[in-house]
Amino acid sequence: MLKTIKINNQQINYQLKTSYRTKNIRLSIYGDGRFIVTKPYFISKTRVEKFIITKSNWIISKLKKIVFSPYKNYLKPEENKKRYRLYKEPARRLIENKIKKLNEFYGFKYNHIAIRNQTTRWGSCSKKGNLNFNYKLIFLPEKMIDYIITHELCHLKEFNHSKRFWQLISLSIPDYLGIKYNLKHRI
Image 1 (cartoon, rainbow, N blue to C red):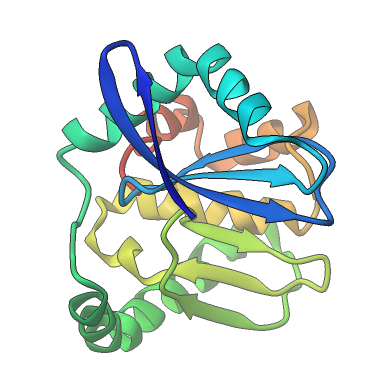
Image 2: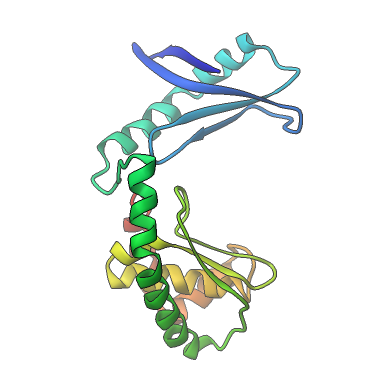
């Protein structure tokens, strides 16, 4: 259900979803500007609106970053699918070559490599050792690609973001903090 709420004299559109599995109100803001609020079935719409108001500073700041970010691709769904089909295999070749090169240092074992069309992630690693990467990596500078791949490779050893995990990354990418910061608003 599409709803509108006034926050700081701005009309904000959001989609309201009801879930029987969630226990708390969840706010999600996506890279394409969608704002989705998921509520448990037992919480009223009035309570949801009060909750949104309490989080108004966070919501406005996130929406501003999306609107003014120069890195976003605002493609229609059909254009996005065409672009994915066009760049999926070149991205796969690039990523597989990078994984071989970067993993020479670490020597981690992994299973499957998948290239996906994701809207909120650059990559992920499953507990089964499967590595997933966004095809859009192909458009990033080489240092950022190396960081993302190293990040997911290090999850094969440390499946968390603990101090040991970040130390693993720093072994091959000592300037990872700067790269991580610059990457934050590109997806």
